Every structure is written in C-alpha cells, then in structure tokens.
Length: 124
Image (cartoon, rainbow, N blue to C red; front, side, top):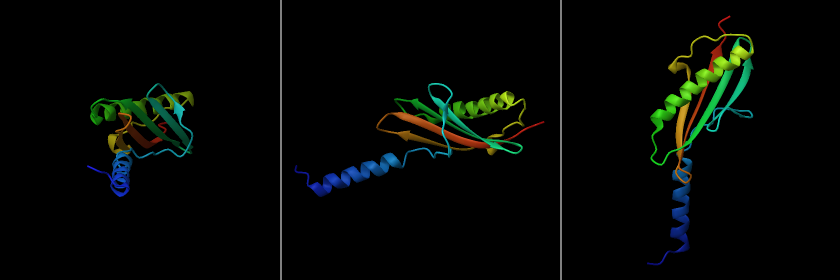
C-alpha cells in the first residue's frame, strides 16, 4: 500500500485536530506559580477577594478525569484558604457551582489536565 503525500498530510492534520481538541481550557491570564509537582496556580487580587486559577496535570495511563476533578476542586479551595490566611483574611465557602473548570487529555504525553477558576470573596 502506497501513501501519497496528500493522505499523509490528511492523517497528520486529523491527528493534530484530535490532540488539540482534547486540551483543557486555560483560565489564567498571568504567570502560574508552582504549588507542588502536579499543581500550579495564579491569584489576581480583587477589592473584596481574589480570583484564583488552578491547574493540575497528572500522568494517567488510562484517562480517568473524575479523581482529577476532585483533586483539582480540593486544591483550588485549599490554595484559596491558604492565600487568604497569608493576607490575614478568611474566605466564604466555595460552592462547586462557583468554579468554572475544564478537563482535557494530551494523548501524546498521557497526561490528564484539570483547569479551574473561581472568584473568592473574603468573609471579613
């Protein structure tokens, strides 16, 4: 079977579309700070709180985004509380509905990504 340059190009374009279509939305507009080996975050100060963006990247041989979603939501809440405490403040609880998030998969590297953002209000 002979491949023509057109069929090889079509295959590469299709593979690129599949790979790009599986990426998570990036909610941050600034420099991410490393929290741990898998987690990074960005804080934007607001008058009565902060906007937090968190990204969690994990290698998974078989993609399973549900545990990563739970880990990402937990990391977002924990980092928000920690950052507020550093500012001498406490935050109002963050409901699941307050978090805008996305999951994606890089099939070439085998990593699954959770990316989320929320506006957090100070309690005091």
